[in-house]
Length: 159
Image (cartoon, rainbow, N blue to C red; front, side):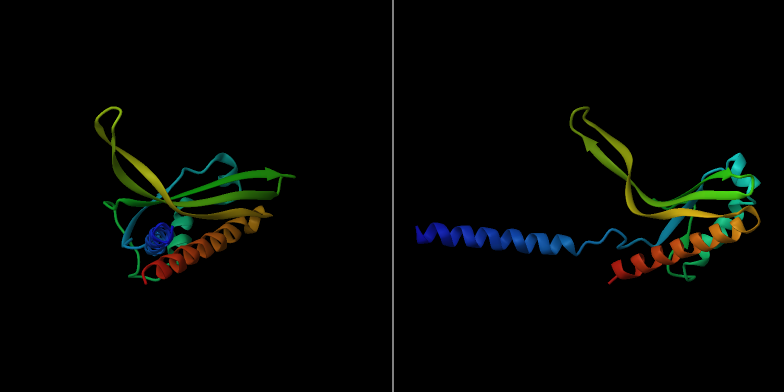
C-alpha cells in the first residue's frame, strides 16, 4: 500500500510541475510585429466625427516605438472595431473592441488536411459616451489607453 501511495504522490508531483511550467508560457511571448486592421466606420460614427486614421494614431500612440512594430506580413493582427449609435441627436455612444489574433495552422484528422485558422490572443475595449463635438477625443483617449494596456501586457509576457 505504501508503494502505491508513493507512486501516486510522485505522479501528482510531476503533473503539478508540468502545469507550473506550462503556466509560464504567456500569450504575448515572442510577439514582435503586428498588422493593424481597422473595420470600416458606419454612418453614425462619421456623424460623430470619428475617423479611422485618428484611431490608428491613437492606438499606436499608446505603444512605445520599437517594442512592437507594425508590419504587413505579420502572423499577428490587431483588429479594431468601433460601433457607434446616436441618441437625442447630439449624444454619441461607441463600443470599442480591440482584439489581437494569431494566424495558425493545424491538422484536421477527420479530413486529413492541414487548415489555417486564427486564435484570439488578447482583447480589450469598452463603451464610451459623449456629445458629438468631443466624441473623437473621447474615443481616441480610449484607444490610447487600450494601446497602453496591450503594451503593458506584452511587456509582462516578455520576461
